[in-house]
Image (cartoon, rainbow, N blue to C red; front, side, top):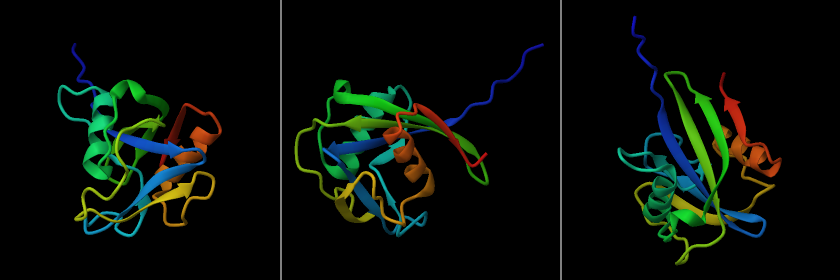
Length: 145
C-alpha cells in the first residue's frame, strides 16, 4: 500500500542585519496583514534552493543584491494558520550590495531599521516569534499549533 505524502508550502524570510537593527517592511495594499511589519520574504519557487529564494526575495522587496553563500539559516518554523500549514525559513544576512529601499511600493508603505529587541507592536506575530527565537539561539519553533 502506497501512502501519499503531505506537502507543505515553503516561505523564506531575510533579516538584513546591521549590528542590533534589522530592516523591516510595512505591508500595504496587499489585502493580507496590511499595516503590519514583516521582513523581506516570499515563497519558494520550483527548482530553487532556499538560499537562492531568500536572495531573490531580498532583491525583489528591498532592492539589495545578496550572494546566497552570504545567507545564514537562523531559524525554521512550522506555522499553522486557520486554513493551512507551511514551513518558514529565516535567514540572517550582514553583507549585501546596495542600500535597502522599498522596491515594491505597491506592497510596502514603509521601510526602516528597527532595533531587533524592540520590534513594532504591529509586527506579524509569527515573525515576532521567529526573531525572538533567533535572539535566543533557538533553531526551530512552531506557531499556531
